Image (cartoon, rainbow, N blue to C red; front, side):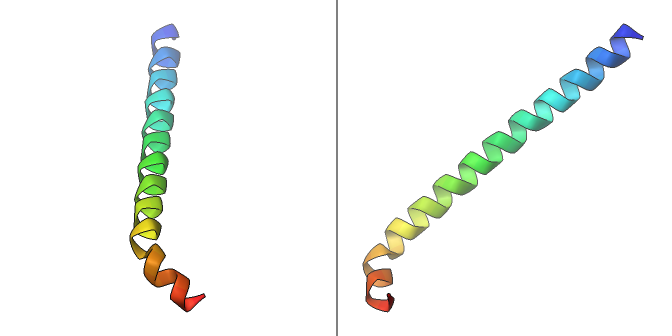
Length: 45
């Protein structure tokens, strides 16, 4: 019983870490993309 709970906890924890890493990577990519387009983007605003 305890092992099942531990496995569920570990799986949920690793999933949360993975999601956080993915969100951070996506956020950084968007930031870099905006910086790359920054000079062009100002002309369109």
